[in-house]
Length: 170
Image 1 (cartoon, rainbow, N blue to C red):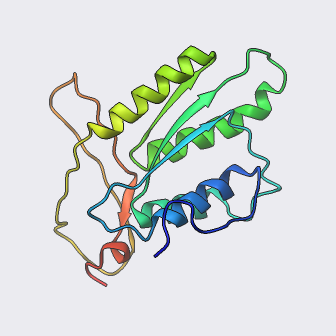
Image 2 (image 1 turned 45 degrees about the vertical axis):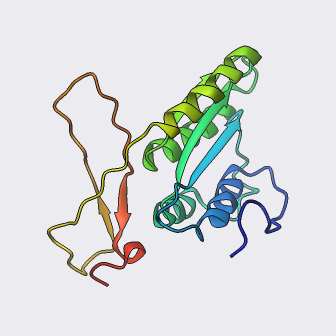
């Protein structure tokens, strides 16, 4: 299966479509390999240009076991701030829901440091697995919640998992 950008996708400025296409390229990787999308963006997302919705894109990422790490590059000018906030919230939702993380930078040196921080964080994460007690067929998506007793730990988790994606109970 082609990987790493060998497939051609329509050029778009729509955030959802770009994330969907990146996730689609990674979905063929085996479960034994990490699947990570790094997004460096100002967060603007013209929803009229998207062919994929946020929910459809998020489902595709969760189904393919892809994590999103986003670096939001903000502008110092307040022009269009409310327009950008919608995209920023979507960047944050992709990152948080997939077990990734979001960072922000306003200047070039911060951006370079953030990129280094993001790659370091992704490289030093642990993956926990489990076998669910109830593998009923009544629903495909199962939300998860992870709690730790030590307050000094940072825990990034996915919003949940799809049983059909792992082949259990279906």
